[in-house]
Length: 394
Image (tube, rainbow, N blue to C red; front, side, top):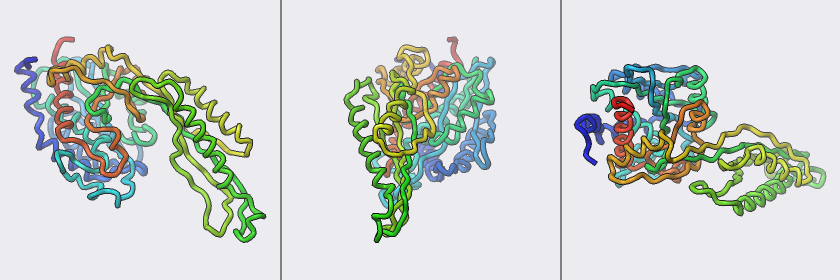
């Protein structure tokens, strides 16, 4: 498909070297969450957007934590939203990395480092698409809003604050740059997070027969939850998302080998498919615990909604059209096997989808990376998508 001169003009501002430089700069900033160290990344993004002439706002969320909002104003109030998060999960076992987790090292056309895929690569693509729209100087009928948010990896505080303060009220479509390998993700699992505790009596291990071992009690809980997880695998496979799962993520118990432990705790989550009832899923977990017939304290910590959108919905078809203009083929579609703020945007009345560079399978892992070509390609798609919305008649 032949691009117009205006489309070519917008795309001409997507520069691979500048994108690479900027992404390395972001990766080299430690933005682990917890505890929530996004401030340096936020300052870099604020300065980058400010330098291209955008209207930029720092929205305070907590002490030394703030969202960055960049607005490319149009003649009307309506806007398209680019949303990405600045925080990453912790660096993890640093000895498992082949180089520093904050190196931004380039090897074989990829940039390595914590957050490369999830999602500093996607956020960089959105930022450079936003800048391309600003630099083009073309008349704008509608606006473009870019939000770089805090706390996606824990409690979604950044995007929740955007919604509660009405910052997104004029947004007609939303695009979240989570790593989807440049496929369009149209569905998402939800999740329910729990903590279970067992209690016992601590004594010297020499007289362990006088104590009550909380870890041994927890062993029964773990076995029961694993049996339930195996049963979940037998349920119907849903396109893109497969079957629901239960994963035990952490365990903590005991103080010393010479002491009978008096408390043990595990944290686990139950992933919920879009066609499941979250209340029924929670009830199943609680029944598994009750069936153990042992005293277990179970507490629900938080939950995340499922989400799905029709592939033919306008928010998805707009993106598909931009993708096809640049690649001469239709995009592939997928589900996103992780939590995402796309469900918050949808619940707030903003039709949204996920699209970004990077593979979810390397996110949160040692030696996380993203392909430079994918980041550049994502920036080009986002830039063309922005042009079509901002400058053209709908």
